[in-house]
Image 1 (cartoon, rainbow, N blue to C red):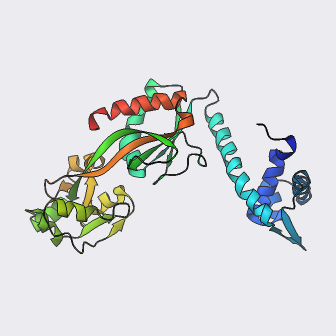
Image 2 (image 1 turned 90 degrees about the horizontal axis):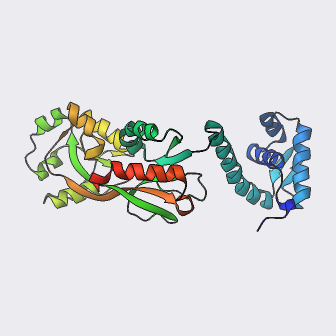
Image 3 (image 1 turned 180 degrees about the horizontal axis):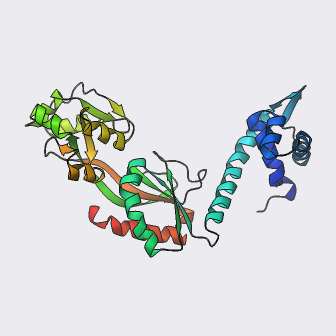
Length: 298
């Protein structure tokens, strides 16, 4: 059902209100919007009259949001951001076909980005935007067409397709491996163990799987695979890393398996998308392409 006209203020009124609420100043809002202070004040007053609600407490030369104004600005800020994003995407590709994908940092940089030229070559009308997102988010609030998700297939409000499962190996620099002369899983406890904040129990699970002591496992923490891989290559310790994300380091010898003892991590990579976008042609083309690219890894 369409909202009555009086509940759909113009963008100019909303922009003036949002800028004043965010900066806490009519003067700052006017400077940001390239308007006079009087123009901004009149727009805010017009919005209040249209809504029949006071949005600011006016105290001498300052303004302060009312309870209603604070609620309202939180709601319209997301709407304005979505409109801005849609306008930017349309300008980048005026004929449509823009696809915005949230990607995990290391997966995006090491696996997806090198393969994207093939997708773009086969789909010349599609523009792809990649946005880094380290964890799940709400598709209703973030204007994304799809996302790469790692973990369990439990993203509320989204449809998912399995891309690939994950196998990790204990990796380190050749010098660290040679210096310690690892022969069995328990030997790795003699070297520093590097941990990922997103998988705090990974080393305990690996050690237990290979019948090694798994108590009191401590070490440096990293929030991304790429940083942990660089630290391991620099000789800071051992890291449990997905094989497919360190192919380059293994190939050129910067990293080596400390022992040939892999572990299925239990995590998997998924393409996720909001159900209402399932039939969007650029998304359908990307989904078909990435599923084909990862078919042998499932």
